[in-house]
Image (cartoon, rainbow, N blue to C red; front, top):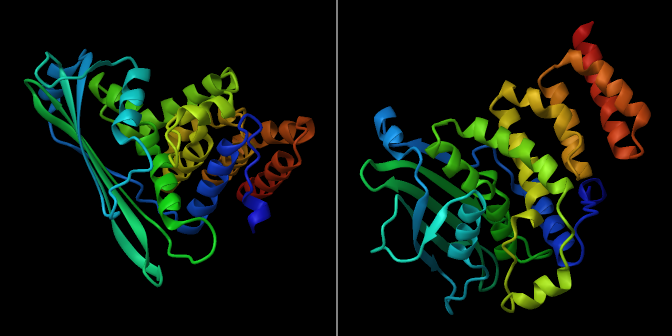
Length: 311
């Protein structure tokens, strides 16, 4: 089974490849369709007041059950990068003028025991966006639970990587920007973000993993979202398929060009999930032209699935 899910991230090396592999492994074991709860708290008028907001202040409350209180990642720093990357101006002091406030409650609590004096971890994060005059706009609640296993990677690392690759956290910056610009439609924002990633990641220069590792604090995980993008994209497709979000079909041909073989295969499978028989010519051509055995096999398998629907 491990062989079938082993990631082949050609554009990731060293620790990046290990991180994505471990995350993909845990996700396969402990995935669930309820990846997040998005709750809209304002009416159309409230969101209208917030449209065009540019500056944002992050108020993060972070806690862990670990006795030494050591965090393996920079929660606030990760959020600041996400918001900055989608064009927001970061305000460092709450007393300075700003349009939006992102209030974060991030808690790591003790989970199920998996050995003597060894426990798993549950991570829960609530992200609330408020406008200075319109008040609370929307919130995102994410919860991930580690799988208690004596062997394999430590449960804490597993659940942390699950949290980082949850598409509602991975694309949190895009979701905030999309909601503020008037699209109170998280599924459409995920679809738009997936499509944008196809081009962005194809044109992303491979980072120097040695230099990146040297800049991070010891015993910490990187916060560069590119490292988690393939698994987050895979999980986003699964989420949208499970929700029967037919708008995903519009970008599936583009997603087959995603620079990761597992995302390509999941995109091909999605044609079958939605019974898109019109995709048969595309899949037939793909099976003849691709140089990747896994992609060809996925295309042939989906062709068989679609053929059974057309009979």
